[in-house]
Image 1 (cartoon, helix red, strand yellow):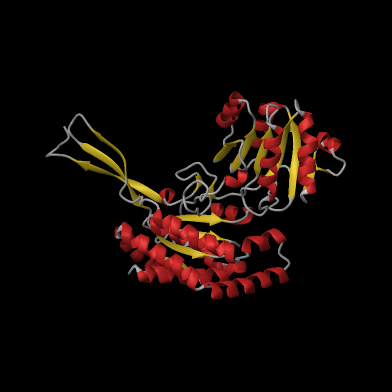
Image 2: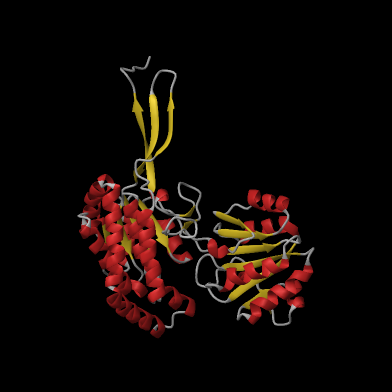
Length: 412
């Protein structure tokens, strides 16, 4: 890993100076190589999926792992989308002139070497590698043991792209081992090489990274996403949004995990709960939600604040928007929350008082995704407060410096 670090540090210097055209060529080349190598990628993925099923991983975890033709096309399309974005490096963020004649500019620069530790999603190799490259950084990636074969097959396509653009192969490196010691090494002993760590996985991984890392961390905590159904919601609109937010893909971090109903509109509970149950979702609710449908299971204290990543949702009746905000403040993970209402003043209050990375109005929480935000892809949804927050795309993987020009200026 120290050799990886040395190689990444050297590669970062080259990539930081690389033209936008060379980075574009590398990403387009990687997208083409990904499709050329699709059969070996599918074979590697089939072996990973078979092992996952044999180990008894949940259906949600297996779904995160699977790569089929549409998903691989999506990965290739993400590479192309990132390639076509404006190059963030060198962009002028601000400029001003002081009374003493100093001209000052703040411009984007790469961070350096990004360490990314992730679990089951093999597409993170492509997303993370591409975004780091676009932002002029080198990347050291560590895949979860469940996805290592798939990750290595995708990584080979990224290396093909780098070589085609005459960029160093070490610009995107993947640890080719399941040894858990690699994670500890990255967190504790590579501060001389890695400038920031991005964890992408469950609570246990993120908590370990936050507690032991000796370099800065962009934390991607679990997605305990809430939807509040206000008394002024449009019922037809709400039913469509909620069904999508929970059931489109239950295993992603933007899936709704808790449903909050305004006590002033009890008539909304029954049709929405019925929709979810008939779609195959288990609803766990408080007494008021249970009263609306006998099929609702009693919710326990542990159901609120829980990320299911499955066809299960917690539900509760609250006292208006203030009650919803209080519940989210207590049980949320600062990821994504949504309000369904036709009352703009209520939506404005929700926007102002809910302190999460993403807050939505009349939209499915499944839009909490860098690709849907026009970023091409993301490394994760950062739920912390510093530097990057929300979807971490290429711009969020940059820092800045000040360029100051004078004409013989001296300070008195």
